[in-house]
Amino acid sequence: MSSQEKPNYLWSLVTMKCPRCRRGPMFLQPNPWKLRQTLKMPQTCPECGQPFELEIGFWYGTGYVSYGLSLAFSVATFIAWWVLVGLSTQDYRFFYWMGVNAVFLVLLQPWIMRLSRVVYLYFFVPYDPNYKINKIKQFDYETGSYYRKPEDDPSKD
Ligand SMILES: [Zn+2]
Image (tube, rainbow, N blue to C red; front, side, top):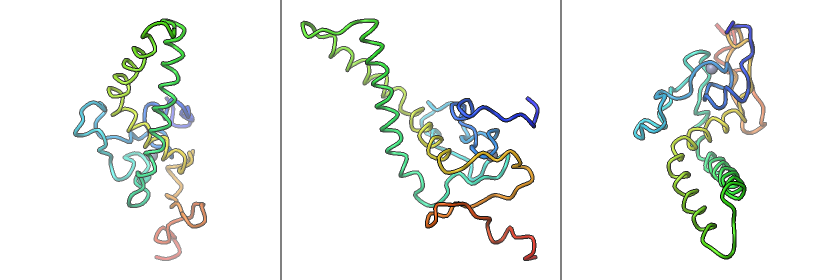
């Protein structure tokens, strides 16, 4: 891949790359099922320097995201079950689906927790094609916009 090419949004999201450069990995351990290291992240992106935890407690909001992802996943397995296995009020197939879905949700939880953080950060940090030249911008929660960090101002040297 050449450095001019813009990495695909969804692909970068699923492979959990930094939202700003879409190249630096957001997690230190590639395998989310190494549970002790599942949520270990570098402080800043190794490729572009984007901070990942934008403020203390930033990741609390990911609870809603992981809830939404789990719900979407359950809807998907429900439809798949309906098509492949079928559902009936005459037998226990609905409860089998609930059991199978619950097992899947538990197994996928480390991956869902990671993906929630990625989705959440993608919501706040836009892609910057000139990430090598541009300075890191800081998100301001008061105004909901980005500004340059004061210490990055070249005139203040
Ligand atoms: Zn980056």
